[in-house]
Length: 191
Image 1 (cartoon, helix red, strand yellow):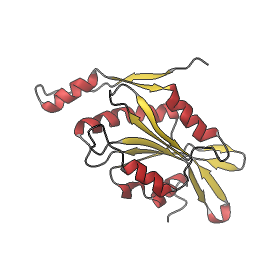
Image 2: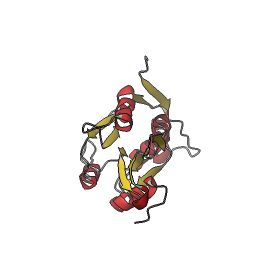
Image 3: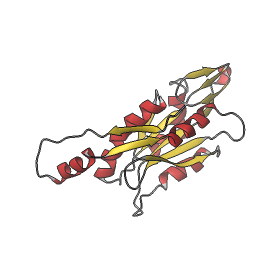
């Protein structure tokens, strides 16, 4: 399979001339963001791999040159608080809080229905349901330009990785564990 990645054009426009917002939009219009094979491969490993070396989460970022999405981290760490800390401590090259995309492999128990392993994509593998949570993390302090760029690329990444459910958050309370589990369980667990 000679797949090398996916590229797409950020098609944004503005009707008001001369505004600094339009200048930002126009500069974003000419950008193409590539989703390299490495991003897809990392997700496939999280989704399909089994055992101790199976990644628990991925964190993606848009590269500093704004031309591609990169895997910033792939980790087997199962501690959700450690994952949240990594996400919350993401910064851009100037040291400002920075947006990220993340994929977290959720594990939860539906009480009498048994333990589930998840990645909110709703694939059934034997008796274990697989579900993957896609998280769009855009801290409140994020610049308007970065917000626009991450918003424009989010749906493309979600479609390529085939996520059915996602969570958008601008503060940590938006991705607290019980909210993530509630989404992963299709609302069956209410915390």
